[in-house]
Length: 548
Ligand code: GLC
Image (cartoon, rainbow, N blue to C red; front, side, top):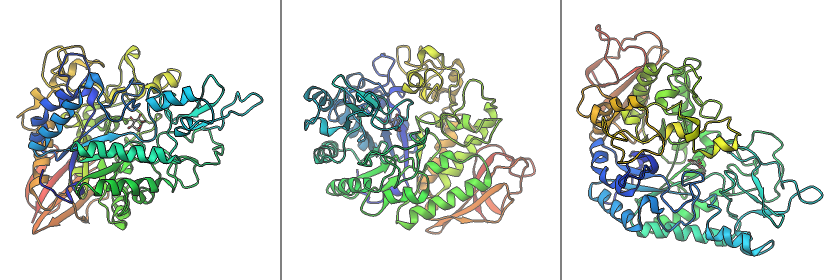
């Protein structure tokens, strides 16, 4: 790859959820050779980089976010040689590779955790995790009231009576980031992968590593939910001390050259708290989840965009934009809700089998939202399948649900599997081209018409909309990094101009119920849907214009 110190400032990055992208061996589960075989598709889509969700050896208690060995590959996903070949092929095609790193917790099968269990209370082995005696007469009560993000206590008891902390599933014990051995181990893991040529890391729950060492009670029932609460007073979310870790990580990556990059997954309350992760000596970028949470309402979207750009700019960082990922309801379905305008990503806000939705409305809004996102300054994340307009699968049979949330909630919260159904590549075949076997989650029959094969080359298809938008984003200096200028327009619409190096582009998005007149323009470059006969911009539609 040609070194480029700022590529991440305006990159379009495609998220591959490895289990569900492409299955090369008919196992029903996606794998590295599968991804490798689809790299030309990704290059043609027009993205700059791929982010691959965890591919490490894992018992899959949380879909691979329970890592048993950070320096190897899960056998069902392939081998280290497959990873090397994938990185090499991607680079050959001009695509960068970002991998997932999971520093808050390991799998309970990790050799360190097994050693901790064997060594007993007070041992150096236990000190790599967070073990504590319980409360109550015989230590039968958990050490604090902290709750797991997936439901239930965040503490589990081991046979000798001690408890260990797991902010997620019990199979995901939290590391003790006060222990220098943990700090060194992760810096070494980063070097292991940087040496193999990866271009960056997506940091899983980057905001939770440091815990209040006085282990206070939280005192509220719902404090540990995934959409976390703001630090620095919270006992484990977004504490100020966590930033030390990332200053260390930044010096590791800088030693490999300026174009290795980090993106933090940090569910924090405000754009200002988020920006702290992207200060000059810390991480390059952080996912901007304010945008995912925002409902389809013009005033909220505009305020969110302004706040996020301003907070990131205050520390010299670009912002990022995300509409969908493997943890939230796909945006084509979020925006399809008839009982709300589609904001929110908590368990309560998820779209379920009984939520009233209008799928056609959702897709129309999703396409408009995508043109909005891709016109904003900063980098943008595309979650596999959104370029096909895939909806959330809201009615997966209960017996296939694999998300630990389903079990941990006593079968009351279905969890995230509906966003993780394998991708349809072709119009027929046992798994619509995903692989030769039955996919690990069943695909709806209707997905044949949404497959890559069905949309490829079809004018107006969602796939071709993404391709055109990404191609233009690449070739047009007005798009990508920089700033935006709001233009006057109707209250329910967002009109803004991007300009750079003599190129100007206007994005107009109509979020209200009635058609609105477009701002003055020379040419319509791209539209998320047909314009009205009189040239007005219909409801839930976006256009990119060459201004007059
Ligand atoms: C992140 C991941 C999510 C996982 C959790 C625990 O939020 O995106 O999928 O369950 O971390 O590792």
